Image (cartoon, rainbow, N blue to C red):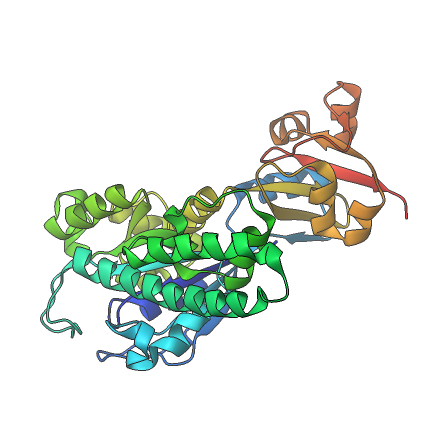
Length: 368
């Protein structure tokens, strides 16, 4: 499955700079004024995974295919976006196709960079975005309620759905995100929630955009500490990225990038941290297929059973699933071949109930 991450935030907080840096594609306009970005920019990025190189060294395939992530740079939201301010309705709609949200929050002061609300205040900025998402969701639920009430005249089974939608409406009306709503086990409500694709239900990571002066000890800066406290209260992940440094990394070789990161005391790039964080909040994992034609990484939800994992490769694999031959990544790389793993009894034959683990190297057998 392709992972899509929407980069959102107020205007002029560094979203497009970060997008360009992460995607290595200078196709998102950056400028010191609001709404420099109007149409969403989209780019597909390979997921960094050192395990692919290790597998390729053994299998010596014709090609290596990493898993991918789609990044979508969404134009800046402002207070009143849910009512159309700053083309807000259009921008909010662009978020619906995203699996997760990377909410970029500026955490440094710079009088040379315009701020739409007069100055840097990370908690206020984060709350503005979250409020607009909740208000947009409230409108969506109210429209669905109206439609459902009309439909009940011919279908009494929808009465329970109306009650649950009213409960959700009241929840949102209190300023609480849809993700915090304790939905009952109802097929009707589950389907309604899927169709509405509520914005405030999406998994979110706060991305504190810091400046170079804060790199030495970012946790001790007042702005970062304030956002970290807000993230803790919301139960959300937060990471720190210097968009300017990430931008400067582009065009450098891998060795030069590593050296530059070390000079700033950074262990890994922003891209790696953002993707790892996204896999964590969405509860995703990777498995591999390896052979002379191709070594490839595949992304699946944690808890996926073997037939569903096979279906990510091709629907026929799931439909005609027979069994899966599985080798743990550590065993595969330690022994150096599939044949050695088989001879050592470390190649396991698994059936339909097997739940894949992160790093499994799998060969699926099927018949249709």
